[in-house]
Image (cartoon, rainbow, N blue to C red; front, side, top):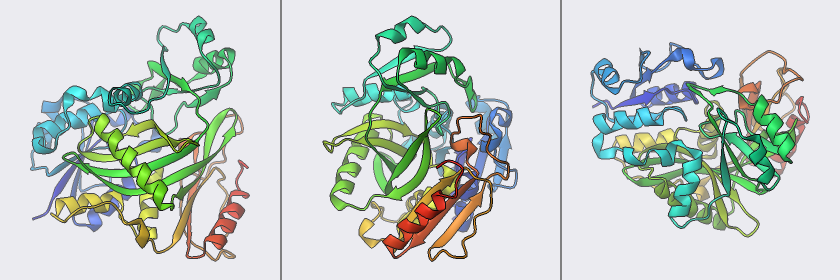
Length: 395
C-alpha cells in the first residue's frame, strides 16, 4: 500500500525532497500556510510534490479538513513553523508526535541552550536581546567578541560576529526585520566560540534517532559575517562515535522524537561539544548534503524515512562502507565553471545567473552555484576543490 507523507511548509531542499519521494513511490502532500510570506529563494514551484494545498491560515482544523486523506508521516519543512507541524502530527499521527508542551525547546534557539543545561549537558553562555524594545546600553556589559543570530532564524540569515558593543549595536540596528513567515523580534547573543563546526543530518521516529551523515563546514569571514565555503565529511571513527553520542543526547534533551533534523555542534579543542542549534527539518543547500551521502554510498535522510515507512530495520549509516570521497563547494560567482580538466566527477546546481552585489554581506540565500566533486583519490579531490574555490568572487 502506498505511503503518504505530509510536508508542512517545505521551503528547504524542496526540489530534492519532492523528486526523492517520487522515486521511492511515496506520495507527498505539501501544505503551505501562506506562500506570500515565503522569500523568493525558498518558494517551491507548483509542479513539485504530488499534491499542494495552499491556505492563508495556520488554523489546524482548517488544514486537517483540507487534507482529507490518510497520512502516514508528518514532516516539518521550515524552521519557523514547527509548532504547526507538531500540532498536525498530534492529530494525524499521534503515536509519533512530539510533546507539544515542550515545543519551545525545539523552536527557540534560546530555549535549546536552556534545555541542554537542564539535561546536564554543556551549554553556551547567551543573552536574549529584544529588537522591538532595544536596550543598547545593556550591550556594554557583555564580554566580547560575541556571535549574534535571530532567535527564530535559519539558513544563516542575519547572523554576524561583533567585536565590541558599538559594532554589535550598529549591526543590530541594520539587521533584517523578518525571516520566512515571521518578524524577528529577538536576537540571540552568544559567547563567541572559535571551534570546528560539526553538522549531523538525522531521521527520528518515536524517539529513536538514526544518523545519515556527519560533516563539517569550512568558512571564511567576509564583511564581518561567516561565509560558507565547503562541506566535507568527517571520517575519523573515534570522532564520529563521540559526535553521534552527543547529537542523540541533544535531541533527547530538546524532546525531539520524530522528524528530520539538521544539528550543528561546536567541537572544542578539548574534544567536548556545544550545541549550536537544532534545526527541525531536512538539511538545506538544495538537497546537496543528502546527495553527498548517497554519492558516498551511505543513507540519506530520505532513505531512512522510506526504510521506516516500509517496515525495514533501521540503523545509523555505516561510515566504513563509504565508496568514495566527496566535498561540496558553495560558490558566489554566477559565471559558468569549466570542468573539462577535472578528474573528479561533479554535480552542480545553478541557483542564479545574476552577479553578486559587492555592497551586501551574503548569506546562503545569495549562493549562485553549489558544486559537489567526488573522487576515489582524496588528494586529487582536495586539489580540484581548491582550484574551484579560487574561481569564486569570494576568495
